[in-house]
Length: 428
Image 1 (cartoon, rainbow, N blue to C red):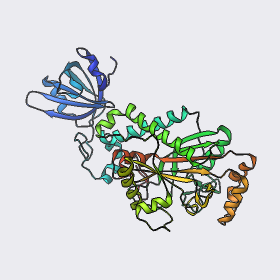
Image 2 (tube, rainbow, N blue to C red):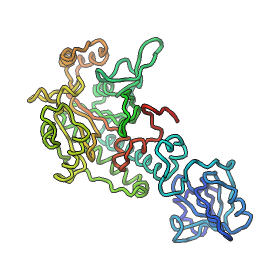
Image 3 (cartoon, helix red, strand yellow):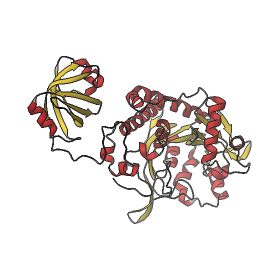
């Protein structure tokens, strides 16, 4: 008999079916037992009246993997409106050792460190699993949106010969006797691939050896990177980012609607044109000194509140960051060379995306490195490519975990990361 998932049971009323999953909860009454079985799509209730089957269920701790065969019977109070009656129950493995928290409760009451220490079982809780389903749907929307616009997915090395940004903290390793680093970004490679395909994207891990111990940083996270050629300036990049976010949220609604409902979310609207302010104006709005070189988290929060109050938007572009705070490959604003053709996108008062227009002339790269006192040699394989003709181009990168955390209202990015790696955690 073919296994049926719980989500498909309402279409099988009156038939005998086989389900399988984990013992989510048992309710043992005097003459009847209720066995709740969890699978990847939801919960199924089995009503046990046979004394022998009831005795077997009594011996099955929560999280034991079982198979249940029974008749699908309508019951409006049961999950999905149906339940299994006259069931037989067969364990598919030994009795499980119960985890140090109850997965059947509506919310996990264990502390976050305890959840992370026991991540393989904590992730089974519907709220933790829901965040990961939303992440998967967001990535699917990212890919689909860009595929429809003739972008090509690329896969770049994660072990590199030099850091992407001068002065960055990177993880070092030995590469057959030569120094190498875990990639902080696919930035150099995705730019070079613009010279091949014009429009490219990548979904992959990046590594930051910054000694952060905050609720918004991880040492390894998933970066959604985009680069496109033949742009006029950074505004073309911002337009693609706007459409990409809209596509991601649409796919979350379509593919992960159950997860959205589990978490009680209302997905944000992406305006047809996301409001934008120049960095100098952003400082004024946030009440920061005019000579501040960057936006602090408190400034970002103030800007998020302003965008919501003024434009009814959860999203806000801040453009024209000072060149001094941007990587050497950033294109300056021709009208105001001290400022960049770069931007950040704030989502509910938190920096979510960094992007902008890049330099595309070989001579400009030599000048930019010289101005910063940087030697050309470490970047030769990257910079030399611009001798062979590169179009005006730009791109952006979205931190997946930070996006999902902000979307679901998680207080800590680790709540939406399956196995977070940070300053203190390398396992499980």
